[in-house]
Image 1 (tube, each protein chain N blue to C red):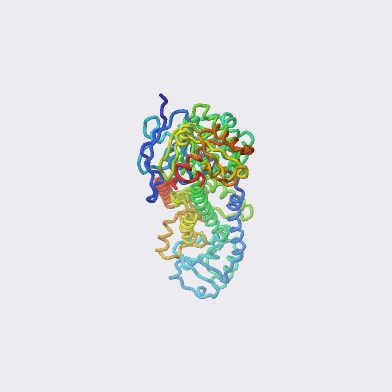
Image 2 (cartoon, rainbow over the protein chains, first blue to last red; image 1 turned 90 degrees about the horizontal axis):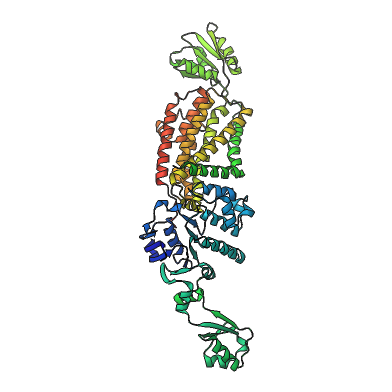
Length: 294
Length: 334
C-alpha cells in the first residue's frame, strides 16, 4: 500500500465572506506528482499556501505523515511561489548562500547548479535574470534543503514555450529522485505531462479528481475527427448531424475506423484530416462550461 | 536565535545597501551638503553688538552697562560664563563686585570689548582664558548627523520592510525556518552598521575641511551615536511592523520624523522653549541623541554626564524592539 504523505481534511478559507476554499479533502501519496488544476481564482494557490503553512485556514487541517503540520515542517518542504521577488543587488550565488544558511541540511551548490542548470548565470544580479533563469533559481531555492515534498505554484506561468519545456524536464528529474511534488497549474498540457494524479478545482471546491487517463476515460468515450469545411458537402453534415466549428467540420465518434470507412464511401477527401482525443481542457469545459484559461 | 541565519540576513542586507549606489551616494551627500550649506550661510558673525557676560548682573552697578550696541547677559555661575567665553559665545566676562574680568586671548572681539571696558574701568584685574571658537557648524554638526541618521534609520528600515512585504520577499523568507525575531534583529544590526559607517565617513571626511570642535571623547560620541541609531531603527521597525502600503508607511514615517526635525534641537536650542514643548521633545529619541552628542562635542561631557540621555535611548530601544518583534507580521495573506 502506498503511504499518504499529506492529508487535507475539510479545508476551508473564507476571505471577506467569500469561500476561497470550501471544505475540500484529498490525500497525496509519496513520490507522486500531484496536480491542483483550475482557472484563475479557483482556490489553488490558497489551498497550496495553507498546506505550506503560509496562511492559516478558517477551518480544517493539513496532516503531514499523519500528524498536523507544525512549525518545523519548513525544514522538510520546499516551496516555489507563484510571485516572489528576490532581494535586489544579490547575485544568484549570494542568494543561494543566503538561503543555505536558513536550513540544517542542504544540498551543495554544485548539486543545485547541476540540478537546476544555473551554471551560466551564477554571478548575475537577480534583477537581470530572464523569466526562465529566475524560475530555475526559485526552483533551486525550493530544493536547497533537499526536501521530501516540493510545492510548485504555477511554476511556468509567463515562460515561453521552450523555457516551459525545459522546466518540465527539471520537474521530471525531481520526480525521478522520489520526491513528492505538488503542482498547481492552469496549463493542462503541463498537468498531462507531469501529474500522476490531479484534482480539478473551481470556485473553491473540488469538482473532479483522479489520474488524467482515468478522468478522460470516465468522461469521454468519444474521439474528435476534424476535416476542412470545404471538403464536406452540406448535405452530409445535415444527414449525419456533424458540427461546423470555425473552418472545420467536427465529427464525434467512438469508432474511428468505421467513421473513416464511412467518409471514404461518401467520397469525402481525407486530406487535412485530424484526429484528436479529449484532453483535460475538454474535460474542464465539460465540467464547468468554462475554458480553463478564462 | 540562530546566529547563522541572523548573520546571513545581515550580510545580504548590507550587500543590497552598498551595491545600491544611488542610495549610498545620497546618504553620504545629504549631510555633507547640509553642513557645507550651513557653514556658508552662518559664516559671518551677523551680530552688530558685543556680547558680554556679567556675573550677578542684577546687583552690578556701572555706567558701562549703559553702553549702546553691547548686550549684557546675566550669569550666576562664573564657570559657565567662562566656558562660554572660551567657546567664543561671549566676548568678555565681568565680575563687578570682585573687580575682575576675563577675556579670551584668541578672540578679536574680546580684544576690542576689553579696550572699550578699560576706558572706564582701569582698576579691574585682567584674567584670561583660551579656547577655540565654536562656530554654528560645530554646534549644528550633531544635529545634522543625527537627522541624517534619523532619516536613514526610519525610512531605510521602514520602507525596506514594507517593500519586502509588498513584493513578497517576506513571504519567501517566512517559508524558511527564519524567525520574525531573527529577521527583525538582522535588520537592526545591518542598518546600525550602515548608518554608523556613513555617519563616520561624513564626520571624518568633513573634519578635514571644517576642523570640527571636539572637547569630549570620540569613543563616547560613537557610543551615543550607536545607541541613538538603535532607538531610531527600532522605532522604524515598530512603525513598519504590520503595514503593506508604501503610501501609509510614508505618512507614518513622516509623522514620526517631522516632530523630531523641529523639536529635537537639530537646528536651534530648545533652552528657551516652553516647558510643554520640552516635555514633548523628551519623548523623541533624536532629542537625546543630539543632546548627548552635543554635550560631548561642546562641553566635553563624559558618559556619566550624559547618563540620562543614554538611559532614555536604551529604554526606548528595548521597548520599540520588543513591541516591533511582538507585533511583526509577515503579512502573507492576500
